[in-house]
Image (cartoon, rainbow over all chains, first blue to last red; front, side, top):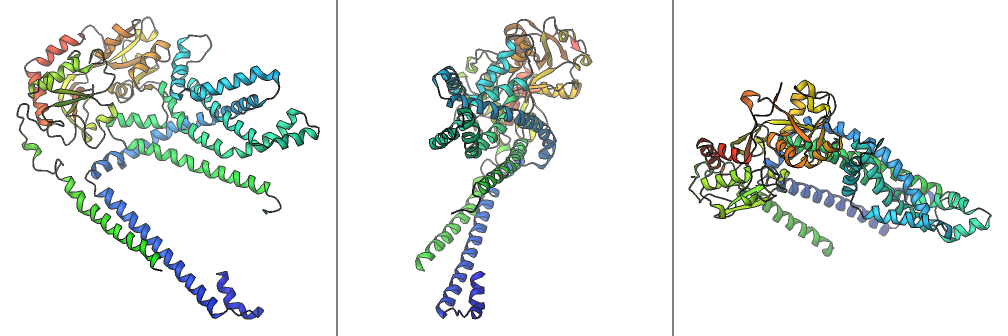
Length: 294
Length: 293
C-alpha cells in the first residue's frame, strides 16, 4: 500500500515515478495476487484429498465410531476433566519443587573450589543416576517400594509418592538445563563482577544467574510440558488422572474416544502455556534491547 | 516464467492422480470381508477348513503374561490352566488339533482395537457386555464369573460380611475389569477406589496397606490367596445378579466370519459337559466362599 501511495501522491514532492516503475509495481501486485490464489487453491486441494482419503477409506465408519463417537466423548469429558485436576495439582507442586531443586543442583555442580568437591560429586552422581533411570522404574520403586519398608510416619499415599518420584527424575533433567545456562554466561562477566568487588556468591546471584535463567526459559518450558504429561504416570499406583479416567471408560466399553478427548484436553492445556512463555521471552528480549536494536 | 509454471502443472497432475486414487480405489478395498459382503453368514463350519487368519491354522490370542489359574507358567501353549484348556477344546471342535493352534500375544487394548485382527479369537477373561458388543464380536460365554473380595487376614476388611461393610473401605480393582464396575455400581464406596493397570499392582498395594481390599474374579482371588499373597483371604463373593449374570466370552473381530462357528463350538462344549469338567479340573470350587449380602 505504501508503494501505491508513493506512486499516486508523488506530485506533492515533485517525484514522478517512471512508467517502468509503475509497470513493475503493477506486475508485482499481479504476482502477489497469483501467489495467494495458488496457495489457497493448493490448500483447498490438499484438504479435499485428505478428507476424501480418510472418509472413503474402507475402515472409516469403524474408525469414526471407535475414536470419534460423540456419545462417548460426552460421557468421558466430565471424568477426564475430573482426572485433569490431579494432573494440574501435580504439575504445580512438582513443577515448583523441580525448579528449586534443579537450580540448587545446578549451582552445586558449578561451585568452584576444592572444598566443595563432595557436593559437586554428589550432585553429579545424582543427575547421572536419575537422568538415566527410566521414569517408570523410578515411579515403581518409590510408589511400591517405599511403603513396603513399613516405615513409621512415611506416607503410603500414591499421589505423594508418585509426585516425589517425578521430582527426583525431573530435577535431574532441569539441573542440567540450568547448568547449561550457567555455563553459557561468558567468563568475562564473572571476571568483571569480581573485579568490581562482588564476592563469588554475589557474582552468582546478581550477574550469572539472571543471565543464565533467561537463556534457558524455552528449554525449561519444554521440560514443564513434558512433566505435565508425565504426571499421568502416577496413576500406576491407582490414582486416577485424566488419561487413566479415559482408559477406565475405554477398557469398560471398548471405545477409544475417551483417549482422544483426554489427548485434546492436554493439547488445549499446553498451547496457552507455550503462548505465555513466548510472551515472557519476548518481554525479556524487549527489556534487554532497550534503546532499540542495532 | 516457464520455470515458475512447472510446479503448478506438477501439482495439478499430482492432484488428479491422488483424487483418482482416493475416490477410485477405496470402495473396492471395502468389499471383501466387509459387513455388507454377501458371504460371511453362509460360511459353513467345515472342520479344519475355516477362513482363519493363517491358512490351516487357528490363531488364538491372549495377553502376556498369561496369569494363573487361567494359564500355567505364562505358557498358553501348555494346555494347562482353564483358558488354555478351553481354547484347545474349542479348537478341537472346530477341527484343529493341538499342532494347528498358534498362540499370539495380544495385549488387552489390542483385542478390541479396530482394524484387521491378527487372531481368530482372543481368550483373556474378557466379560461380555452390550457396550463391548458394539466394538467386537463375542462367542457365547464359556465361563460364568463371580466377583470376589480379597483382604489381608485379620484386617478390619476381612470381617466384612455385607456389601454395606465394604462401603467404608479403600477398595482397589484392575482397569478394564468388571470388578471395577462392581466397585462403582454395586458397592459405591465412600472413598474413591484405586484403579490399577494390572492385578500385580493391586496385590502390591494390598500387601503395603495402600488399599484395604481388592476385587477380582473369584478364580483369580483364589489364586492370589493360595499362591501369591499367602496372608490374604477371600472375604466373600458377590451375589449373582440374576438374569444379567456375567460371562467370559471369546473375542472375535466384529466382522469375523468365524463367530457363528466358534459360538456353536462353545455351546456344544457346554452341552456335553466339557466346560464343567474343565472348570472342575482347573478352577477351585467356589461353594466355600460366603456370599456378601
